Amino acid sequence: MTLLTLKRATCGFCCAIEGPNGETAKHTWPDLWPALSSGHNDVVSVRAIRQIGDPVLRTPADPVRDFDDKLRALVTDLEDTVDSPGHAGLAAPQIGVGLRVFSYNIGGRIGHLVNPRLVERSDHRETEDEGCLSLPGLWFPTARSAYAVAEGVDQYGEPVTLSGTGLMARCLQHEIDHLDGRLYLDRLTGETKRAAYRALA
Image (cartoon, rainbow, N blue to C red; front, side, top):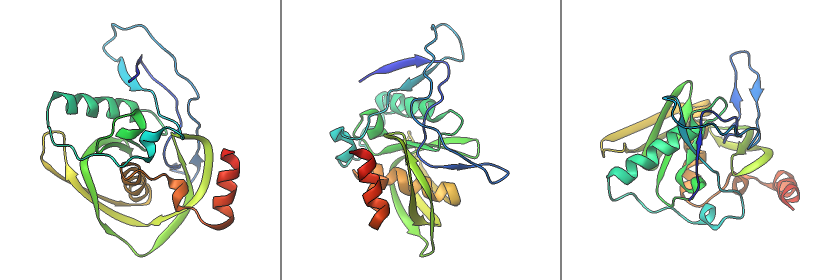
């Protein structure tokens, strides 16, 4: 388990981000990892991201049973790692931890969800370019429900419900897929899927 002590990082992210003027930002991982010395009060812990081919990405994560200091440290790492412009979400298996936890960074709000489950999804679906920290440089149109609701708990075991449209809905579905051992590539069909796997070859 690798821990990098960094002040900031510009990395890839799990979903395309639409800006206020309709522009979409796309980044690849890693663009920059500026390692800085410790001792500053704004230094954060950013974890290395597991890449496609790592078995942890294809292994369903275990439910969290112990709400202890180890879980709180994991949540801190997830939230620190997702706290960078352009990041939308990060699941624990992406940093090598097989537990059902993910963090999100949507609209300037950073948070997490433990033992999440999707409880509602709209029938209406939207197709937008989607990418992933664990598949650097790849972007493919992916259909997702336009609205989603997820329930779970926070790091202290208190109930939490997250819901939304657009990027939040896409993030919830994308991250819970990670916890089930799935990648967004699994959602692709037809020529788009064939193009994705040719890009991986």
